Length: 391
Image (cartoon, rainbow, N blue to C red; front, side):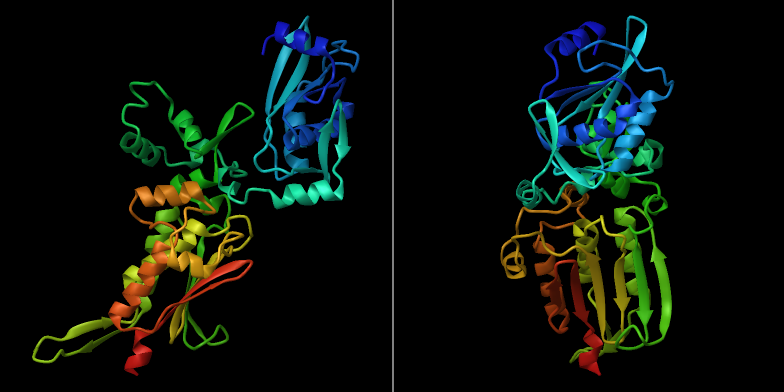
C-alpha cells in the first residue's frame, strides 16, 4: 500500500472496516478492534493517525513489532494479521490489515468483539453462543505452529513432494518453495515471514516435538491387564507423521508374541502373530491423521497382556456417529491437509475405511472383534489379543 492509497483511505473516515489510532497508547483498544474486524468483515487499523484524519506518525522504532506482539499475545484463537509500515511526509504509520476469519469468534483480553458501524462493541451472549456454535472445527491444522520457523521444515522432503505433486512449479512457474507451501496450507505468511502451519510441521518437520512435545506417542508395554501393573518398556516416540506411524508399528512388532501351529497335512509350522500388523498400522494412521492437535496430550499406545489400545485426543466430529462412520465412509475430517497428504503417500484410507479394514484383518487372523469407542474428548481403538483364544 502506497502513500496515496492511504491518504484516500483516511479521507473516507472511520467506518466498519477502518479505524484510526493516533499512538501506541491506544494499543489495547486497537487490538480489540482488530479482533472485532476479524469477527465481522475484516478491515484495516491505522496507527499514527488521529481520529479526524491528521497524520502524526509513530516515533517508536519498533512500533510494528510492538503491535504484532500485542495482537498475538492477547487474542484467542491467535490472530496473525498483516502489518506494513508506510512513510508519508516523513512520518511513519503502521497499517494493520485484517481479513474476516474462518476461525471466528476470536477473543481479545477475554472478550468477544464485533464492529458495529465505526465502533467496536462487546458481543452479546446470544451472538457469542451462535458464533461459537458455527465455528469450523477443522481449521487448527492451518494455523501457524507457534515457535516454529520455516527452517524447521525438511526442505528436501518438501521439494520432493511438490516435484511429484506439481511438476515444474518451481522451475517453470518460478514459485518459491515457501509460496508452494503456503498454497497447500503447509505454511502461513506472518508479518512478512513464512512459517510452518501445524499441518506442515507435522508432515514435513525435522522434529515436530521440538516445537510441541505433545505431538508424539507415548508407548507402553504393560505386564498385566491395566496400568497399575509393571511397565516392561516405555518409549516416547517422536518424528514427523509417517515416522510416528512406523515407529509405533515397530514398538508393537518388537513386543507382541508370536505363536506357532502345524496345519493339518503339513510338516511346516505356521506363525500366528498376536495382532495383524496391517490392523495396527491402520489404528496408528487413524490416531495420527484424525487426532485433535490442540490439547496438551499425546497419543497413548498401550500393549497389555490381553489387548492393544491406541487412544488419541479428539472424538468424532460433531454430528458424526460411530455406527455411521463404520457403515459409510464420510468426507468430513478434522485435519483435512494431514489426512490428504497421508492418503497421497498411500498411508491412509478414506475416513472410516481404515476402521473397516481393521475389522476385516482381525477376523482373517481369527482374533476377537476389535472395539471402537468415541467420547467427547477421545477416540479409542482396542485390539484383543489373538493369543487369549489360544490360551
